Image 1 (cartoon, helix red, strand yellow):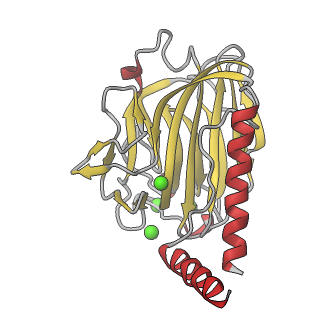
Image 2: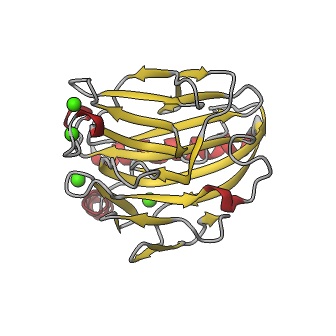
Length: 277
Ligand SMILES: [Ca+2]
Ligand SMILES: [Ca+2]
Ligand SMILES: [Ca+2]
Ligand SMILES: [Ca+2]
């Protein structure tokens, strides 16, 4: 069963790779930050692993009690709400900043507990949020328990005067999901995706307000709080020109990696299969 399951995963990976290789991307995508958490943390300083990218000149790093093990980042918001990863947006050096460029921010995220059980801050209703994608302070994909019991999953942005939001279905716990926000600068619109499927889009016609320099993953990097209780297998931030196509333009594929126990089981199963021949 496990061997078939792994083969299935391998086939999915191969077909995804073939699809990427054989079809031209609908948009011209530039990878700006790509982190698989194969690097290392010393304090809050992240050193890139092989094949990883940080076009901010090395500002990608951690905060709070975020840690890395086995290529996966742990975001322990249940014990430290200041935990997460972020980079300095202006250090990308993009003319027009992030409001004036189209971009894709994405993560492979696993929630350790369901959305309804994600941690709350100690200060009452107003801090009952967990941001998993955060772009410069007022553009968000988050869990919101402020007046919502149970918490809702919500994305949107504040443009300085109004804040359109949409509620999406909750990502299930204990399995990886691909989560993404896509900004189209030409129309000032924000679209959310879960596992490649659009969750809708919002726009006020105006760009998002920039109240912070930071682009965050797993927490609210504007105030360095509101962390999730979960794990991140990879995060990526890219800019693009042309028309975004969710079938080809995401940079992360959240295929579950087999655990070392699963790999050992596969190895033993293969050994048994070969020795019977
Ligand atoms: Ca609270
Ligand atoms: Ca609440
Ligand atoms: Ca945890
Ligand atoms: Ca990883």
